[in-house]
Length: 331
Ligand code: AMP
Ligand code: MG
Image (cartoon, rainbow, N blue to C red; front, side, top):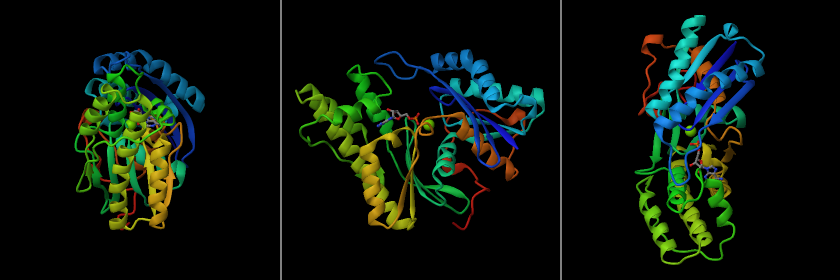
């Protein structure tokens, strides 16, 4: 069985093909780059996706060595994400499914990050830490769905880094550059550490970090301190969630999973609770079509499909609203 997955929720237009044994046959992407100092412009990103869609699709099929007519199922990320971007992926998926008469599956993008993490790291029943441009969430599986144990109350961890960078004209996405600058710091600066219950809040930290910089602190010191505080806040919420759920695995996934400071804090939390810390590796930290294909395949095998007419985009589709029949409910 072969599933083709289409990702277009934000900056990436990606297409991947996977087998039912979890072999990734292709994973092709083209990423929209925003103008310096600017975030993703939804209409421009959607135009980018429309321009590259045919090329990315045909490359993914040729790398997989498979004509579209031989696909068993097509999966598409219908949310959460930016409406204009989502509509490009949805249109491509519906057209393919209708033309070749192939079943269609709607995939939640966040679940895609979790499932590619499980596939590539071997995590079975983890406490998930999903950190990306669109998410900062701690989730555990229970009673047939992913349940949220903590999340951001305002901007995401990825947004914190990218918005900070935009204000000072660093190129975006800025996570790797902030991490590099942090490595050159000479001192830690006190910044607001805001954990409310099991949720985190990063907007005050963003304002205070920019204020520190404007009042003369070095960029390296601010990057280091902002990274330390933001990752420690999340690690605190993760530790409480781990103590409560008694899970024996952590799964760190999404674009910010590449951050070494975050990885090392979570590894220490895991050791304290006798758990293993799995970290998704590049290229599967970033958005990609393979994660949509693999999640679509798992869903399809459990009987989940969507009629073409019902395959509409859901920009605010939350991960805890998705039934997950392919995971063990008693976990
Ligand atoms: P995604 O939305 O999953 O594609 O992830 C993109 C986000 O990951 C952006 O906000 C990046 O700034 C962030 N990111 C990527 N690499 C790193 C890193 N090494 N450290 C921190 N953030 C990162
Ligand atoms: Mg993502």
